[in-house]
Amino acid sequence: MSAGVLITAFLAAIVALALVAKRMHVPYPIVFVLGGVLLAFVPGAPTIVLEPDLVFLLFLPPLIFGDGWTTDVRSFLHYREPILLLAIGLVIFTSFCVAYAAHWLLGFPLALGFVLGAILSPTDAVAADAIAEELNLPRRLAAIINGESLVNDASGLVIYAFAVAAVVTGTFSLGLALAQFVYVVVVGLGIGIGGGILLARVLGWIRSSGLSDETIAVAFSLVTPFALYVPADALHASGVLAAMSGGMMLSRKSSRIFDADSRIAASAVWNLLFFTFNGAAFVLIGLQLRSIVAALGAYSPSTLALWSLGIAAVVVAARYAWVFPVSRLRRALSPRVREREGPDPPWQVTFVLGTAGMRGIVSLAAALALPVSFPQRDLILFVVFVVIVVTLVGEGLLLPVLIRRWNVVETDDAVARGVALARVRTAEAVRARLQELESTFSSPAEWEIVGRLAADYDQRIAHFSTHVDGNLDTASDEALHEIETRLRREAYRAERRALLELRGAGTITDDAYRHVEWQLDLAESRLE
Image 1: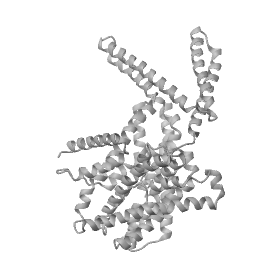
Image 2: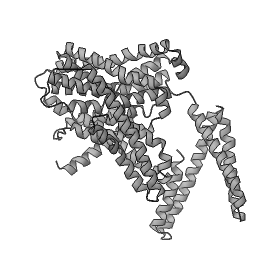
Image 3: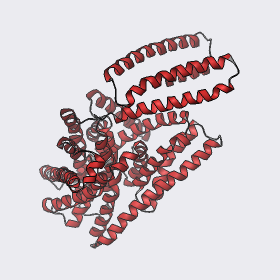
Image 4: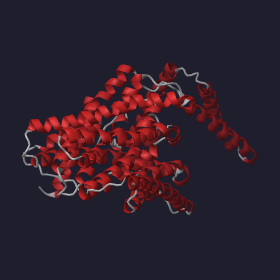
């Protein structure tokens, strides 16, 4: 099969699986992985072997950068304690649990067990974000899950590096491991934050010099994740932390470095990129099964199932065993936690947090990165693959059920109040600016237009002021929004029909048609 045919078939499979996922109302990654497993055993299907360096370099930088870009920095810093307890404490705890389970169940030496534990201990940022994307989780829970998955690779990969070294050389130094962990985190964050500041200044200069446009801005945004990840990785620091922190930094400065057209264009390109890369990453995970199974002919299927499912059970149980006591203890030992984070969450929320432990492409890439001659490499690969499928599919399907059954959704209207406050303040700023400009008016047209603008902003102030204090009539607002959306869509359809008739009659050129259509597209996109 030629490369062109293979790529076309691969992309077509991603689109087809996405349609299946949408039809079944199942998160994309679950269908992508299962589809990849089925495709792996299609007669004549080529064997695709993932190169770990390619996986880390191609998939992780843009996906992690995008997650950092959309992360609420204030929430991340606000919940830094539970995030770090999961990203560091739970990673170490899981590594120990898996190491001893592998020693007892698979007969691994402890050093080899720690290799497996380090591979499986970090949750996957791409998987967590993709699974939770359409779930209306409480803001606190969403911030903790996303923050954990973005940070925990540093602790997991440090344990991984030293466990591999212990297997190969037979030596281990706790002090050296701790120093390496500090280095990985500090240098990774330093490159991300420092690089983000530098890139923001470069982009700001390009924009102020009049050299930027949508194409240049989008191209720059695509290069940025790799410009942050590669130097950190070359210095043996955390490229993931560099991409994540750089994404956070640049997101906070985006209004200064990109204009509106650039942000719209970049949003469209990045949405497509996320869809394609997420699909490719998870389908490729499934496609690995055939080559992994082929190397394990010496083991019976029942033995492999017992071992791999046993390790998967340990990984899942370790997370519950950590989150329940730790979440209660930190609140019992520190009254300031309750003051800062609010009352204790219901046990159902803690259970959902325990269930959100999906593994993904990072774990598979770490397993693939083991040297070919590494002891029990093929068995480790198989166990890692099964744990990924169990956590991604099993927990990914269970999460929406639990959230619906226990109604673990966002009930605080702080976001809605914040939006209303922003609407009021920005409208007031416009009214003030219009009043300042009145002294410069020299024609009746200016007074007529400013009158229309002022009336519009006065209406916004009156409407959103009632929402600032939480006086939201949700049913009324939704009904009004539905009516306005329906009527505006009818108006835009009428405009499009007239526009098509003008082009069909040759009254306007294709360039004029596309210009007006683009304006209609922008207007209609704001209805969502």
